[in-house]
Image (cartoon, rainbow, N blue to C red):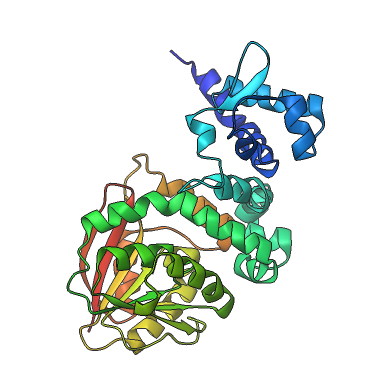
Length: 333
């Protein structure tokens, strides 16, 4: 049985693993091992790393099952590191890069965030996350990959739990890279849609939707959801959008959605709904991530009820899924 001190020691050292995996991803180690086991010396040549230091990194990761080390000190993939390959569906490489790089720096400023209320990312980088991504396309691409890595498994669970069949036109507000919308459109061949996001984001989404073969059912509309959103849909869908923002900003987005929606239009928010009690729930850690990185927050059902009521919506229901994601449904009143 693990003692409290041993368990706390494991928790305190969590950043060791984060950074070790991040470095392995940056050096493309999982991709370089696809053809079979290789030594650290061999890998160092291709990755541009220092051979002895790389060996020590991979030895530590192998001791935790991320890679496998054989008697000849060659390293191979394991089920864990297979997920770090960049060419596999749902790759975790982008997530490891994002959390090990700029998110790691933001979390390093968590004390300042808690002491002052200022978003740690803004303090560290001098600008909000989404401005940072707009001005650094290479990080925007990593962000897209990271979102698939962290939230990708939720999509199938959402589609299994929530029925979109009675929707004619679905507006995906803040649709990002289009991965969620492409899955919905694939499952519902008669559904038409609008993807609404910033111009730079739409440019990235078009590629994914084209690959899914659903572009002919998507109308791309660029804009700023703090100013207005596109009309023309009977249901408005926002997945992990409202949690990015504080209450004032969230009210602005939701009121703009309300203004664009028809009478009895449906609002669908796919979010973590925090329990009111003290029970373990991973969304409570996401709440810290939102506080630190975007300045937003996860919310309880009662907090969502208040927020939606303030924006002119009538609460309908919460549809749970097999993951911690739920779909909140409301209608205009």
